[in-house]
Length: 132
Image (cartoon, rainbow, N blue to C red):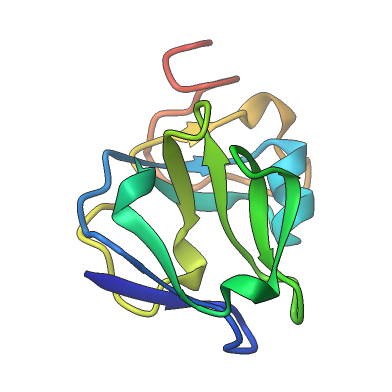
């Protein structure tokens, strides 16, 4: 199991090191949510992710089965619940432990920040991976 937490330490979570995929998302929503050029995340079945401390201190932007979970104190984006509530996209920057997976591509580069240049050799997709 891997552990993760928000910036202020109010919310902690555990997640299995069994991620199905990992990507760097450059969409404008992810940039705004993180305040950075892109959001590196890893996707996993929702049942393999658990809040272990501070569940009462979460703010959900959106809906519980289709939203972003933030710490209500510091605002850290911990994960996004996606795919009809079946998967969680864990923000890799909130992990305390290093996962075995690494991002395999960049997605939504069609709307990436104009001031950011992608300098690695990972595949780039205009939208979703495999979707353009």
